[in-house]
Length: 179
Image 1 (tube, rainbow, N blue to C red):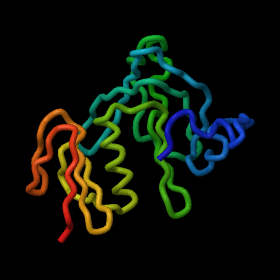
Image 2: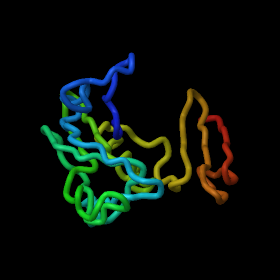
Image 3: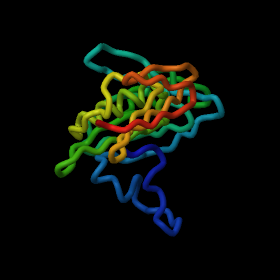
Image 4: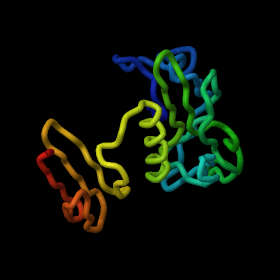
């Protein structure tokens, strides 16, 4: 997964010529035509069609006008393109793409996705990779990581949660041995 404003400069901070994301274009199957940084607090509407039905989300911070070069469009910018962009200038343009390359799949995000949509996209990318979650059906604010013989539960939320028989206070962590 690669996000906006990537592939712009090399390791010496020299800008690539010939389009962006220069060294990643073939892998990602996209070409960025124009940058659209958003004003402070600005958002862009994102429309994504999923098996569960259409749902509208938003992106923040940055957006880009993207042209596909083989990538599949997974989400587009909506009509409500936020403050500072003018209505509809990015409407219908790719916001999230997926490109099969070699034996893998590469995803490109042309904006900073709100957390709910980021989770949807990461779940889909995880499925593409055939990677199973450490613990299924976790609350959105909880992260589970296995490290050797330990299971680490991180609660990024504002409320106490119970996971795998363990209570994790808000903004706290629990480490458990794995059987």
